[in-house]
Image 1 (spheres, rainbow, N blue to C red):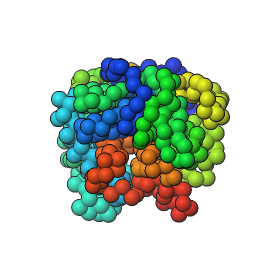
Image 2 (image 1 turned 180 degrees about the vertical axis):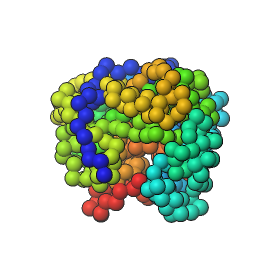
Image 3 (image 1 turned 60 degrees about the vertical axis):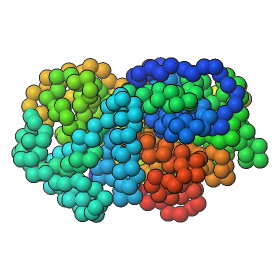
Image 4 (image 1 turned 30 degrees about the vertical axis):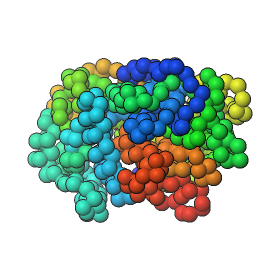
Amino acid sequence: MRRHRIALQGSRLIAGRSLADPVPDSAPWSGKCDVVIIGGGIVGTCVALYLAERGVDVVLLEKGVIAGEASGRAVGFVDSVMMAREKQAAIRCSKTLWADLDRRCGGAPGYRQSGLVFALHRESDLQAAAGWINRMGPETDARLLTPLETERILPGTDAAQYRGALHVPSDGHAEPRRAAPAIAREAIRLGARVFQQCAARRIVTQDRRVRGVETERGLIRCDQVVVTAGVWTSLILRILGVDVPQLYGFATASEVASAPLSAQIGGSAGGVAFRPTSDGTHVVGPHLSLAPVTPAGLRNALRFRHVLRRLGHVVDLAPSLSHYGFMRRAEHWTGTGPSPFEGCRILEPERRRYSEFAALNGLAKTFRGGEEARLVRSWGGALATTPDNMPIIGPVPGYPQIQLACGMYYGFTFGPVAAALIASGLLQDVPPTDPTPFALERLLDGRPIRYMP
Ligand SMILES: Cc1cc2nc3c(=O)[nH]c(=O)nc-3n(C[C@H](O)[C@H](O)[C@H](O)COP(=O)(O)OP(=O)(O)OC[C@H]3O[C@@H](n4cnc5c(N)ncnc54)[C@H](O)[C@@H]3O)c2cc1C
């Protein structure tokens, strides 16, 4: 197995710019509501929608702009491929919710359940895929394709390159730049208030009961808080003494024009993930990310040993003094005065040129005419995982009025179901799927950690 390498470029933070559609701010500012949501990515916007439609007085706070971070930078797969059985029911539920969100937002999220196809180049890949389909049984509609079927579904490739492919017809993709903004606009239409450029500095509690959220514009009094702040969630809860173990990584994706790729189906071949966009281009990304060295990363290295070992072939380690220094100062913030959150409105790692090269090279080697693909733009983004690679969704132990959802390596896939779980907890509804595997307690109570693909 390939060992982690050291990445020399790609982990510096640059002045972040959003790729996402703009969302108008709500007015006027108000210092009181039922529920404050911290973080306007795909999860936070969906929670806002699910609560607003039930008449809850909800405020969504975003330190930058809606979908400025991971949710506006994803490749866009809604994906179940090779994932653990424990994730499949939640992903199925998310696909249903994605279809409903797309309908409600007039098609703006661009959700297409058009399948994903993963080419299998080696005999060992084929065996692993066949084993996975067997283990999943009725949990998946995945099937194996022959090399000729693969060539037909991925035009421009050559059957001789493959042992076959894994095809999941019920998987698909959506448009990260448009999805969360469209959902936020729908939430606003239903009564949610959205305040951007407004960081939540800390959750104010007394005797473990929530009193409100202190923001850079002043205090908002509320009864419940939902933290959907992506990679920042651990820092927000650290101030309350709550340990939320997340390891984050940086990835680079690119938009390319004139690539000889399918205009319908997304997938992966030659080490490159790809999907069509609604503008006629394609988003591509190599299966590569890097883990910046941070104080929390060093402290938690042992806890994350399973993840680091299992993802070793796709994750490189990246020392960056500027990034390390920023996170160190952030961890030492005492909770008074301007916070680290407003010090980084949009977290954007510099794009990694090696990843751009790997994606274009993969296209050129795998697809006839792939060398014609022209780079339109590239961007970096951050994504997080947990010690067992399962999302964290649900109440915070010891703080029953605080819910959180984070640690989602595939958070664009999980976003809607994570939000529906949080909303059902707050509204005391029947949960849309079993929440137990996602509870934060599992990572804190000393039980053995098992890696979940
Ligand atoms: C390059 C790349 C490709 C990816 N591809 C896929 C894919 O194909 N499929 C898939 O399923 N997943 C993919 N992911 C992962 C996915 O994008 C994330 O898991 C998901 O978007 C996380 O959503 P979120 O709402 O939890 O967090 P985010 O989208 O990160 O949103 C959190 C928000 O909280 C805000 N915030 C933080 N702190 C505060 C504060 N104190 N006050 C106010 N606001 C705050 C941030 O500014 C941010 O906007 C990819 C990620 C990257 C980077």
